[in-house]
Image 1 (cartoon, rainbow, N blue to C red):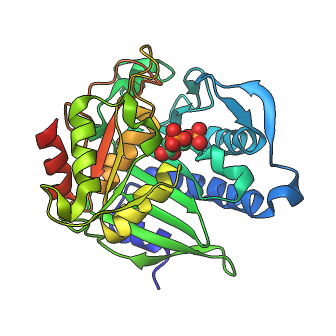
Image 2: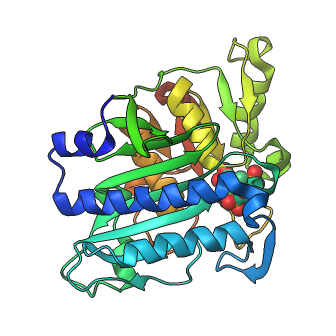
Length: 321
Ligand code: AFP
């Protein structure tokens, strides 16, 4: 089986970008080790700290974020980084060419229950026209990403990655410590009978979304005339990986729970990287109003509604909206 490094080299990826990707992979291996140690490594439970999102930080959130920061700051080609756990942009190397945005540990609510969690990353070229540590560096549209990926800490440790020419999946061979190519050029089925949404929020959705989901639940007895199944991992990496693997539609729509915060998922280090992976696998990724990769970011930690997965099913959903 091909090793990740050989695949990247055969794709003639810029050597500096390969160095950034390798640094992210090294960090994910360290995180994977601590995740698998769990309670034995004393990394479970919550700190007394809150992050910029107003969320209580799990110890593993803090450890994972620090690991990623330490390794990326020491990686010459990295100009600046942005993290779900950092209030603002962190300047790295003045001569760096790349920006890295990441969610060090997505699915934190799953940590203490041994559920699926993962690391999501997104890489852009630094703009020479503005200072590297400026937040404006990260106001590039998702379509400007040069690389996007996630590492899923599940029964096996998987890497899904794209540099714009298809989405591939690699599996960590823990004996050798290499990620080996296990799925090349993933193609998501255009149709599906499986949806993923947190149904407990249904009374807070807009009427169009309520109608769309209601018709999925009606199955063969309703206008869709086919039965649907439902899954919800409460970790985007797990739900997106299932969609990449066997199709489906994943939704986190806007809702009225908090007028100041109608959406939950973050554009920079959740929606955009996942959208690049999904589109490179033949799927679609939209907010409720536009293609996610076309969104002009306004704020570093802004949030966006997400509807992604099997192309025809996403189109069906958008028709309701
Ligand atoms: P946490 O990292 O705070 O657990 O949030 C995970 C997440 O951002 C995304 O990975 C999930 O799809 C979504 O939130 C789950 O949200 P709910 O807990 O509201 O279902």
